[in-house]
Picture 1 (tube, rainbow over the protein chains, first blue to last red):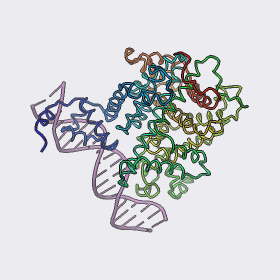
Picture 2 (picture 1 turned 45 degrees about the vertical axis):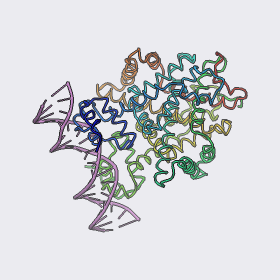
Picture 3 (picture 1 turned 30 degrees about the horizontal axis):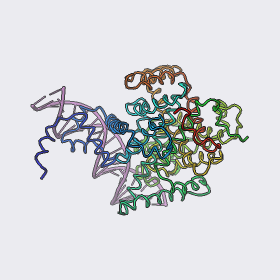
Picture 4 (picture 1 turned 120 degrees about the horizontal axis):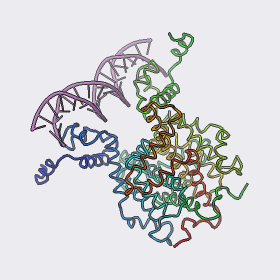
Length: 263
Length: 263
DNA sequence: ACCTGAACACCGTTCAAGT
DNA sequence: ACCTGAACACCGTTCAAGT
């Protein structure tokens, strides 16, 4: 029943690493991390496992390649796309400032997880597998250049960039979990799409709030505050917090601000 | 051939969730993440898989429990243990300041990965599985209380705590990868333990340095700098960087420091 | 050089059956 | 209530064989 115009194209198209990675991303997006198996992949590509192993060494390598492709796409989006988000923070700031470019990268990744909820997990896995893998250097390089442009003293480049990258990946991962859980909660109860978000936020903050108040007073207190804030706003505030810490590194006479005036 | 004094104790001891988790941690420590299988576990505990499933719902739940046990132990160490590290940063600071307690938590986790290299990966996985799992709240709560003690305005509690937690987990994970890779490199070449570290640092910074300089100028520049710095020092600098950003949140008249004087 | 597909070793999980 | 262990479905990976 499939239109035959597309048929010949599909089948004739030679198997390539690109095509395999593309199929892997589609599978991850639609079926989740557990949905990407060599059997599902061979079926989708109409081949045998051996064919895939000729183009790709490993499942890990395939996962890394899929992650890399998605990250590259996310980093390539025009900074202007996220301009609205940037404005949220400092309306008076020049749109081409290093800060703004860092925010653009951050939001590029943040927004990418909407289509690819598996991204943060995979990034964390690769970061802990080998920090000098193929993907994390892309992010590190992108952020690092702006850190340098910020005028940070060379001795602090690594520290500053690490702080930003870790925050972005961590916050992004947390948000992905939220999103995924929202979807699960919703599908389990078959709710209308519109109610999903609010419905879920309830559940999430309730889960935090339900922890024993004696053991977790802070979390309990913060659970309420979580409900009121927009995810993107929260995320941006975190990026700006780290940016503030970085900026302090090269402002003359500000080095010892860690210690509060008290004591 | 085994001493029979111990024998009866071992075999008679009833199977419990605690004993299972304990065995899981040992397996993870000695055989790595791929070494923890239900078969290895049943062999070590001299039972069948069904017995384990009676005490534990899932492999994920087992992993979470193992992670939780190790994190709890890491968070329980006396802050004094890490005093030397804290002194590295601000010698003049009171030893009981919130900053110091945060550093103690950070180093508690940082040091725990030496014995448990699988910790950061597992933490990241759980954080992205469900941020309100059993383990991450422990860390969140521990850090959060000190953030509150720091005098951070309530509206920023979540943001500030997130920034710290994400940095700590991320940097810790990166370091675990370094350590693991060092071990691999060393064992592959069967070098003396003393040479390991230096030998490896060479390899790591070389790997970064070998990236195409045209595509990764920043990373290439930073690779050299990485060699000269001590891991712990680097880690502490990152924590202090975030702390600086946090402190700026409640210093009067400092809110707009993100924007540099330029423009 | 590129692909096929049966076969292998191993995994998490279940469940009827025992005590 | 707690444990046994055979069995199941499924996984990543290999490899002799084809073109």
